[in-house]
Amino acid sequence: MQSNGTLIDANTNIENHQTFTITPRKISTEIEDQKRQLKQHEWFYDATSKKWGLRSLNDGTTHVTPKFDYIEIKKELGFTLVGIKNNNKYKFSQTQYNFEMVYGLVNNDIGRLITPLEFLHIYFYDFDSTSSVARCIFSNGEFGLIDTIGRIVMREATFIGDFKYGKAAIGFGGKLSGTLKSELRIEQLSSFLKKLQTSYYLSSYTEDDQYFDKNAWLTCESCLWGYIDTSGQVVVSPSYDFVRTYEKEIALVYKNKKWGAIDKKGNHFLNCQYGDIQFSTTKDMLVLYDKIMKYGLIDTLGNLVVPIKYDEIDNIGYSLTPVKLNNKWGFVSKNGELSIPPKYEMVNPFNFGFAAVKYNGKWGLIDEQDKVIIPFTYIKMGNFSEKLIWVKNGMNIVT
Image (cartoon, rainbow, N blue to C red; front, side):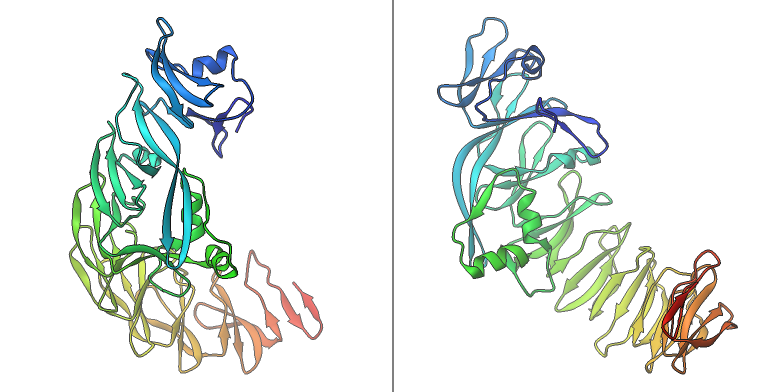
């Protein structure tokens, strides 16, 4: 932030909005006055009441009596976000938080409040992603949607996630909460809270509360999940116990304690029958895990590439993928063929066509045809990179 209050992003580009908060410093320069000017009105700070109001540019008459503790002008959206101090309380599990502000929107053209002062947060950046709606959080903790002219188009959602590939996960029913244990978690609770426009604090500072505040995860208890599009329409009905964000045209869904996958239209191409499903690092493969602790690979078209029979699969996305079977490691190709049988005690991923592997207690280097390039004589060996590899022999490490 510059000294004049202008926000600058990570690329040092000046954003087209300004933020003003109450400070004892008098804001009176001509440039700052211009930044507070709208089409027919301007924001002014009343030192006596310590509030912000709106007055006419033509004759200086007061249009809105000073009553706001916070303003943030968003000229590119045609709004000014206004806030007043208001204490709201919300419990995540047994830990209670106090939220200190509520917000509303003033239309910059007419200079009037067009929404109730009932928001804890509005995700304005949703409008930047070609979305015609933005997520908002109401003072009672519920999520909703607001459109580009300030109309509230949805209420009573329990949670709405980020828009990605034109869709956002949405949960209905149940309660937004926090947990230290659940695997069906949304994000770190502290990260979620820090992104809110309103300031907040713990209602009590017991050791348990402070530990929870630092370590808890945001969850949605007893919610039913589906997806909405960027117009706010429900495109996948809320029928799942949990869902994850879309990756390209695939989303992972959870029901009756099993994972499956759906396409962009919400149709199943993997039924909810797997113990776990994860995307590979390249997002073009799915790692499947079944109830008997076996793994396989499936592509994003639903084709089984690697049979679900391996004890472990690692470093997916390389030319050959390491797989573990009966406590030994080998490699499979991208089409699922077993290129190198499981016979090694440990392996590193292939890099530049070579991989360090451990055999009979010693490390060596092989190529993709399983030909030994460096004999198995070393205590430890790193990854091959640009014609170099470090090795440990006795007490020395050499390259």
